[in-house]
Image 1 (tube, one colour):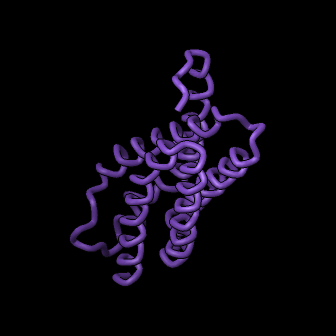
Image 2 (cartoon, rainbow, N blue to C red):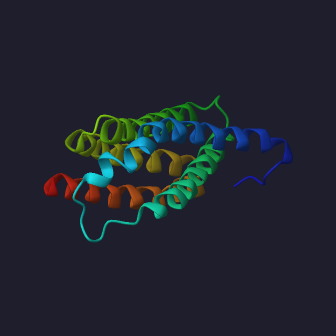
Length: 161
């Protein structure tokens, strides 16, 4: 792995901002529904408390941004880098889509379909990033774990409602 160069700070910041822009789009669909529609759903006893989602997602989004940076810094002239970033963009789009479908459209089943596809896209993203930068692939694993938990939660909410 190549050492960090101070001139790469704008690219690192841009990578993180790209991810947080996606997060803001998803949050727009989520925030108004947390205290209304989502609060009215029957949830399992193991449902994480609402206050936990913010810190967890913030951490995951920072890790996603760092992973994007680690791959992007390898150069867009490389075909594998462009392909890996395309996979990243698809999974980020699916991340946003899940919030829109589950919260914005109040569709538990639709959310379940989207999160399953998202889960597969995260796996593909991990593999594509790992080939280019092992740390970039590895730091996406907590994201996959959290989305696995969220998938099971989505499924459980579907069964209970």
